[in-house]
Image (tube, rainbow, N blue to C red; front, side):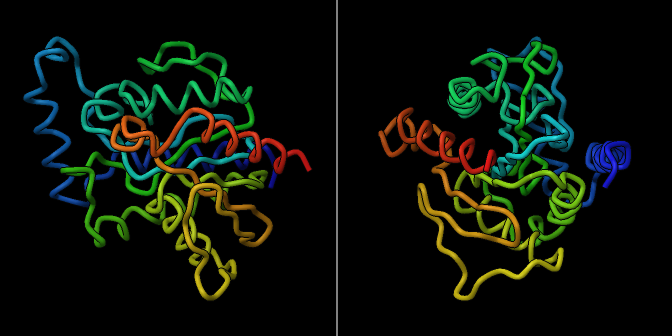
Length: 232
């Protein structure tokens, strides 16, 4: 696929994602959160729309998360930006040489990703971070199309089991054979899916980082492996 065509496809996907109103429950939730934000964000204008992917369009590494945070990306307008999960993730990407800075607080903060593209399975912030199966299935075609457009991607890092399963479903929908039995998610787990290596990473949620289930060292090992595999 030519460079211009890849960019055009991603531009089209981004426009469709940002205008999407297919899931009434998610639309109501993302907008109600923006209408009544907590005190610390009361003076900010929320994005309150679905989130497109973000990063290097020539990336060899893709990260797939669950969904935007209600007061993170749903507020800032950029995936994994403005909350504790994003703090952990972008710091790890910076240590791995994939992000220009270790912090991400706003859409216009100057952050640049090199050789990495971040996306998610569900594009709207869901109540309690739990989208329904129907909402996941409604959103999945966006990921399918991103995977086709980002044809240089060779490594996919799944941030949590939801991202792992979402990538497998999107790959299958794109006509790529998924091994049977289905590869099991785990931190550091690997599976070859078509011409891409899938690597599991615990999601950098506060539940995982506060309890020590996920440490900085654990994330560094995963991203070092992703960088190594992407360069081969």
